[in-house]
Image 1 (cartoon, rainbow, N blue to C red):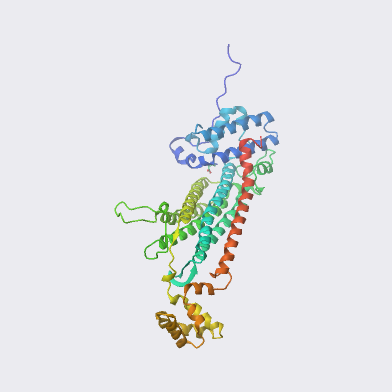
Image 2 (image 1 turned 30 degrees about the vertical axis):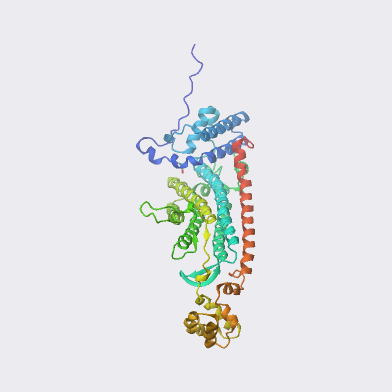
Length: 482
Ligand code: ARG
């Protein structure tokens, strides 16, 4: 007997590029990593379609089940990826249609890949920012632990890479911690603008279908929905901001890396790296090279490049989606991967650092500024005190013991006495610094507490983000949504 109707052809995706150019326009190799975000966005979209009466409850359940099956297949590595379908969005949609049939064909109503890709990118970035903020903390904790362990240890403080004034080792280590803390703040700040939902913007104008963008926005844990569909689909400033924060983070990591490379040379002799941070030479059996810090230092170049690539991509684009935008993803992803890897590597390197006590190598001349201040405190005008110290410094610095130092100092000024002699000792010099935020032991002890509190604030920010991001995982797991 003849069937009543012929089996339907599966839905065609006639819009995907055909022929020789097909693999050039495909973005699957890059955007595959958006798969979970894509499925989450699809689930929220299903809820919006159902609320609009465009999917029945039954259809919504069916499509949602197909979407969650897709996710299982993706996670199990059995998903039938097809590059001919261009991107992750069309791959997932095609699979949903294969699994859910006609109901699946209703999925793409009231949306376009133009709003879909931004939705995926924003969801993915939310998770990535959470991960990056999590990854900054262990490095900061390693710096903080080293600073606490450093106690009264003193290192030369440099300007122009010339010895300037002795400082506490803890003070130097904490300088790097504060930079990273601002990097975390910048990422958190970027998150606030990343976390705006473009779902429901359509291709450029919105849609004539009665959908409510607040529904996917709320389900996915976005802070709000877009205000303008053209803006929502065509700007990528959120990628630039995040990548910009990462470029600066990578620069800060490169500076920390450089300090460690220098500190671990025989010439500086300030620190040694644990075995995990170094590599040998295939030719020179005597070598112990700081390969990990060097690679971290090199990472910054690529991430700065990512930021420049994004800015150059966006410059001059007309309003509305243009396919150029597809290329921006790779830059942001590379920036995320590169900085995550560098953060993890640096946390290990810093935790494994061992410092050498080099206070004895600090020259009396490095107390020069404090000698000037000694006179200033006695009422000598600063400029006069400066010239007095400067002209007598060679003699003061050459003194072999404290009595001769006192003689040289008193030859310079009758205002100098034993107190000034003591300043020539690095520990006294450091202890003499009294200004808040300076290297004096009291200020540094205060700084250690402040640093601890700042890490607490960063953790609080991570919790705020994690709470919003949990909406995404709840949707994927079926805890929430259709
Ligand atoms: N793969 C595309 C991208 O990453 C998705 C959007 C395509 N939109 C279009 N109208 N061709 O941007």
